[in-house]
Image (cartoon, rainbow, N blue to C red):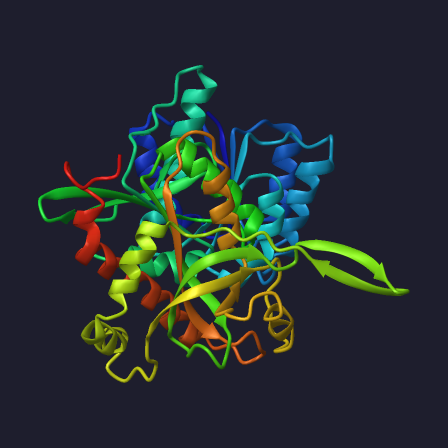
Length: 416
């Protein structure tokens, strides 16, 4: 087992090295540190490594300052195309800079590599690296990888780690450090009680925004964990005259508003829409229709976020459209309304979630999505609105299971 760590802040790996020692990794012989992109490339030209841990913001030379992600991405490009480079078995990017993580995400996604967010106040980044090392060690020696595949009750998929998954992991559901479902998919396990029944839950986020990534992640989760309920929470854009900032939308139905074909009609080119709508689970929808009447809960919800919170939340049930791009022009949403006059919101993932659940063979989980409204698909986008929208969707989900969970779980009322 050989690990190359390319990072100009090697001191932060001290607790990781202690953990790796307990796994039988000889940190003196099997781990190599370099502090710049040039040294990393030289090592990869001459030696073979099972794992490369790469700081996203890395200096080009030892005497340079780390100010850009350019050199790390250049190194990744060389790994991908240069035959003189010994390609590592896996690559994990690490950074405390969220902007850098976003900038590098496409390059990592192309190769199913992972990026972990480093913070000195959490061990999550370290657990993800340890899980990867365990996988590589067992795979290298031909040992079967022992991964927990016991069916779970609820699987939650978010589009973004921040603020969406963070809002879910803030729920009091006894969350554990992330673990691998396979070598590229990680979930956080949790549990809570519904009356006398212990309900298990796993949460993750898609590799990138969009229907395709969500559909792929959903299928992996369905096939690996066989959840009884599959749900997405997060943020979306709303139709201004129908919803308010902070409202939570229950998406039913969902469709790809860009589906159709380009035609020529009377000599004029135009796009002929052909939306394929998929519904949420009808039994779950009926319970959310009842949850709308919980006026006290929705009145108090903003205060749980912040005593000075100015947002208000109403639960709304209706059509939500999915597309492949973030809308910020304030006009496209008007075109989408021509496809469904009751349209409540627009986002990028829900149809992928519904399609994955609908098309899976054999086992099909009950599926639905909750998204909080954070803007009106116009240029006015605020971080505070996004944080509250993610928070509200997570808390509405928690409230749903608190009140109605016994109707879906348990010996007599559980989902078969």
